[in-house]
Length: 242
Image (cartoon, rainbow, N blue to C red):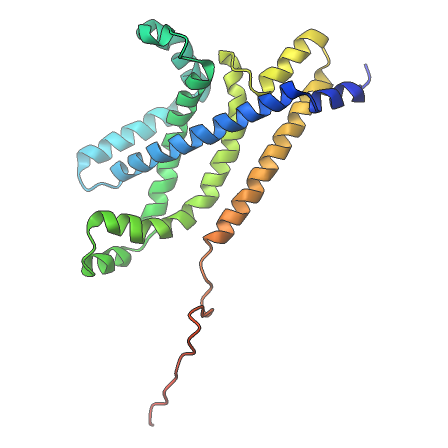
């Protein structure tokens, strides 16, 4: 069987594939935003002085890092409605189930990334900010976070790219994302090479755009190099008598 370029180009330009790609992208973005918020809260628990919150944060990270993401999706979509009758209603869609599953699992990884970024800020920054009279919440949001963001961006960007690929796991709960769209066409035509290649191109394009965006975000938060004076003031050097 030869590769049919007409089938490939038709799939590549079809509205079905485009909608599947948008669904995968929307799922990845929304789940990543939720995971970052949850992960930040868990990271704060992990670095708390009180041992009880630290233990709670550790348990969350341990639990969701230990369970396969696919198993979490199956538990939410299949076991959830059995345990909670309210989930049997029409509002509980495959997209919502996938969103919850990806968010809670990814939050465990984001918690570790953000915890490391927060701990990378020197303790002297905390002490200096408190000496100026800033309350703890302003020290966190005005002093620590702006410095921690730079450290967290590269691994967070990698996690988002991984999330884009993980959305293909949602095919097991009937979410018609990009890979499910390709599989549906293959099941009818048995043209594996053409339809899977079209999905491959979509993934390559989306991930490439995400990498470019990550590069510009990193450049935005890049530290000013030592010796580069942006104040516009020429320093005055005074000679000390011998």
